[in-house]
Image (cartoon, rainbow, N blue to C red; front, side, top):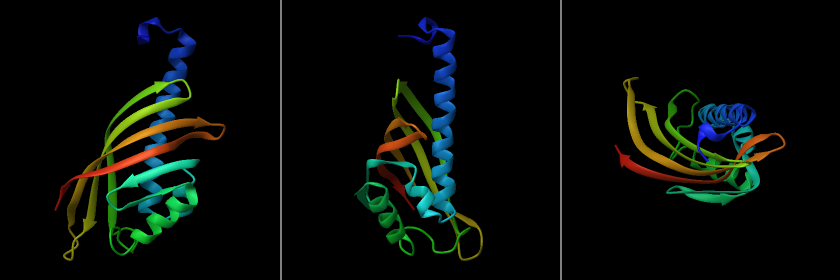
Length: 147
């Protein structure tokens, strides 16, 4: 069904869903870079899966534990010494589910204080609408370019 075939109510709902999903991506970045791994883990559904080149986990607690284990190796220890950019979202909403592809860029503070791009990759996501908002059901991360 094309956007033109949707009712006004369906079109408004679609726009609201796209905005909420964009917020999910921004919160993901904000909590990850802020080292708030508890809030980060709550962006995932109870039975969510995360897979990537740095590991994986199922469920918010396992995902939180996985990302905490990346601190000092794949993530900087000090808040403010690394930053993720999330861009180029392509999102297809299908009722209470959505499929998305996004690009991510990982930037760190170099020894001289300047920004240094370390990695570029993409996520393929399956998202679900829960009573408290959109959540990641499955997030598959791929690193495309290394420094």
